[in-house]
Image (cartoon, rainbow, N blue to C red; front, side, top):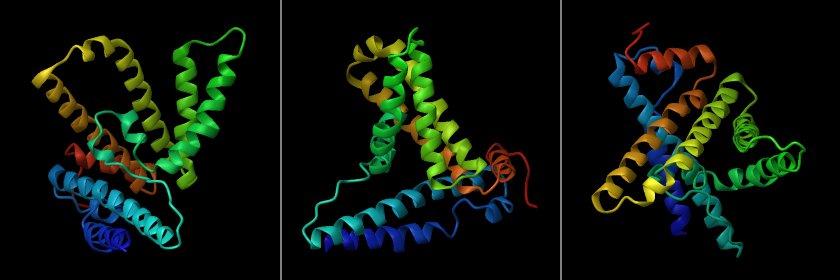
Length: 221
């Protein structure tokens, strides 16, 4: 019952309250400069988390009432230090399905090809297929396709970066390690938050207007 109550509070108190001023085509059209656009973006990022995780809490609680344990679906995703860790903790049931049925089969099939493609090409192809599927799973539109491509680019860039900096990162200790982790959390959150623009806007033109507002281009219409 506590889990159900937590979910109801997340959804109907926090998420629905944030919806009043979170990112939307009508509100972004009235944005008074970049600051208000960023407030809307942050509100949307929090709203979508509390909305999704609230529904998950309700489902998990209802299932427990009849003795069915369901897996967790969210694990503090906005506190993860990189994009890979974010997707390992956000909507886990969907991403685990996509990893098992799309990423793994494609990457294994490409590894068996003769001649074998480069590792980078295999990762890019498998990641792209996976994230585009995740995007279009929500709705088959160009903004959701862009959402998948956005996260494909982010995950691929993160893979290239970690491959080249792994030894250096393991050598960090003390405050340097803490500072680097904090920077990673901040960067990851903002990359994800900007990606929600594709999620929130119904057309590519609306998304372009939103990105413009975030950097101070455009104004009240």
